[in-house]
Image (cartoon, rainbow over all chains, first blue to last red; front, side, top):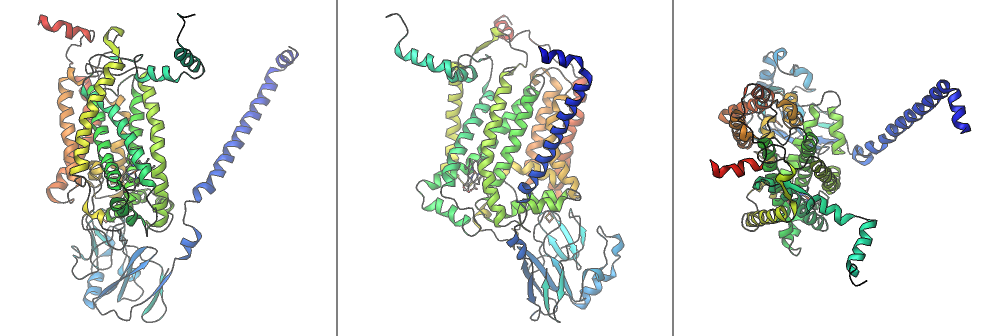
Length: 183
Length: 407
Ligand code: HEM
Ligand code: FES
């Protein structure tokens, strides 16, 4: 009874103070829960040993003009193609400004001859055809992804189909004339 | 004293007073649950779906006892289940075909709801829970299909997880998070197994909510009108008997496939071990995903395709409001009924298109079919509700039955 009477005596001040305490506690709790979720979610991200596997070296010495090899990097294929002079010429003669993902061939290669790209279609991740001589290279002479019909050109730029972007150029450096390190 | 209750009854009453579980079951699917007396065989499919779910969990747990979720061993462990584990072939064929039959049963269940207007007031939440069940089933089936680690497992997982890369800005981060690496690999297989084990039990939880929501208004019926107490009969023994008969028919069909055509609904390429460096020439998802896959490929733009695909399922959440007619059953809606069948055909056509290469005539059909899918829900449903004159509704379920001889 005494409590109730006291409570009634100063209703507004007391109640707004209680409301404040309540809301502050709830807000702190909510932020705490949100923050503590992060390590749980982050545990699903690549682990340290997975990240450690992220570079590979390869020799291009055996590769002849017009040939291609595939290197496995981070579980994905990397396409290396030793382009012929005609192919380089073709990749550079067309207006890149009008392409779906505009980029000049010069920006996509370090050594004009070697086209080095990740062989994963930028649509939904299939591996495009065109590395083997028996495979179709699509309407633009580069690569063709059969999954949903994306055509890439001799610079592995997307030209037609649902893929939104050119095949990605991985980070790589030439350790020597014919040795590369990817990643 | 001798006229008093028997010892057994007393023990039963003692227990019921403390945990009234038997009366709870009796109220849910027993003699105390009154159901409309005119339910037809399309009302069997809910109970059937529940039964298939039990089969899936049972066979799944037994498979998990012999399965190894590691990229170097998964394929071999499934082959070992097929060849060496006692009845392993049966468990696996029951599980793999069980997934297909689960979808057959649930799709029929959903089209039943679309025809008889079961999504309309007061059953909107019941309908929502049904769509959530379908989504959980899809995630479960997708993660399960990855486990044998064949070519289709691997490339299906790659293509579907990559759908999330269409999300602007954070898409790639999300995909890396899903993979636990830079491509579909061992961490992916591991987590998919964990999720595939978990989700069926989440499914059970949502199914319980679904049945709870069903019991608030009670079952709809082929006439779509509200059933009066006079129009109802006890679920047990009437519908338990009918459900068991339906179950018998179902089991005949299911085991015919399990025993004689166990791979008819699967893809042969999944008997080739996963190869991350070579995509099969023609990848297709399991048949139950084909209409959605077709919608994904209907358009030459990644983000739009993904939005349309998810939209084709999410749109189901709002159809209780897109349908402007208050008459539930299509039986009394002359125009809607025709549109229902066209829509059903549209879904079949999309299913076929999903299995074809997206070029030429299949591509045109895919586009027309996708257009019609959304046109049906977004335009026809609201408009037909306004302009259509429904046939007169009977005043009660008993009326037409009783009146028939007089006709
Ligand atoms: C909602 C119910 C479920 C559905 C729709 C479902 C679906 C699937 C599918 C489509 C496969 C691939 C079958 C194949 O081609 O080999 C599969 C495999 C598997 N599932 Fe399930 N599953 C369900 C419940 C469960 C449960 C509850 C468990 C374990 C507790 C489980 C454990 C497994 C295992 C170990 C495999 C790999 C062996 C195999 O490939 O046959 N499943 N599941
Ligand atoms: S994954 Fe290459 S076109 Fe879809």
